[in-house]
Structures are given as structure tokens and as C-alpha cells.
Length: 49
Image (cartoon, rainbow, N blue to C red; front, side, top):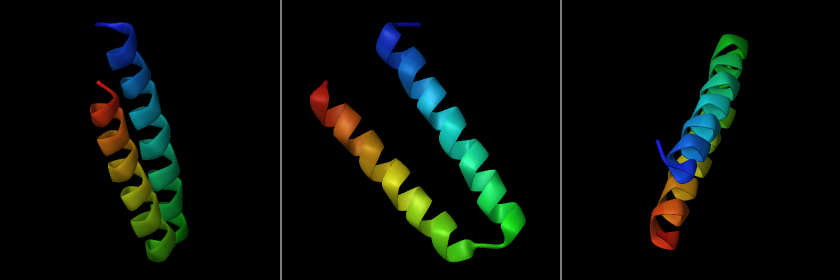
């Protein structure tokens, strides 16, 4: 696993933890915003490569 892949894995794990917490709290709007942020972050990472 390269350094970039490892960083991406760590970032994804953090987003999943936050998403699970929001889901437990029943905050669908914040969960949707988090999903949008994660997807745009992934797009930026792929553009940097």
C-alpha cells in the first residue's frame, strides 16, 4: 500500500466514524452534507494524481 492509499484509507475511516455517529443521532441532513464533502474530497484527490 502506497503512502497515498494509506492516507486515503485513514480519511475514509474517519468519515465513516463521523457518518455512523450522525446516523445514530438521526441527523440525516448533516449525514448528506458529510457524504457530499467526502465525495468532493475524493474527486480532488484523484485530480491531484
